[in-house]
Image (cartoon, rainbow, N blue to C red):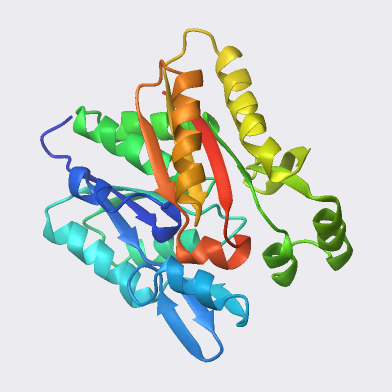
Length: 288
């Protein structure tokens, strides 16, 4: 890396990374906002995901854009640390206007060279993008080369996740009431993914019953790795209020795909819990 370059990564709380990660890598985090009635809470600061799970059955939570001051504070902190270049990886642009806020706020720091990418992802898929980008920084990659690598990394990071209930997606208007009711009555569990072209959530598979979820997630991950013989890869696992199942899934995934360079395991944040509810399970593969 050129001596004049000191590079940082900005992501948001939707990345679902363990908090220890932020001590290991040059990654800074902007809190997204959860609202309930007239109250608003910064994710992981004013509210934790456990409170959302406890209250969401009887209360109507929504989500909102990050506060401008929180964005300004992150840019200020990066500038104070002597950084000169910034990679921004936030929740997919089709799901939030946070990226545009980051672009506008960057104009207040002309001393920083900022590149905002559409991650086309969320949750631990977004987290995996931020961490692998930070690894490249630590390896000494220049900013120009890093930007090109991040473009490829976005395409080469694929996650799948399954929900225990469609209730919260229906509440938020993401699916119709009839669809949610049919899914509940038939115990149909959709396996969802983020489209690699635009980041929209789409259905990758459907299974009947929760017991079929983990085998299907493993099958999808194994098939993708098999389609890229010889390529180095990382693995990701995520769970929402299902730590025992998440631990079992991580164990099964590493047993099925033992050649992974790294594996990340995250828990769903408050923002995503609002829309997805509890008992989510997810896996992903990232080619590096």
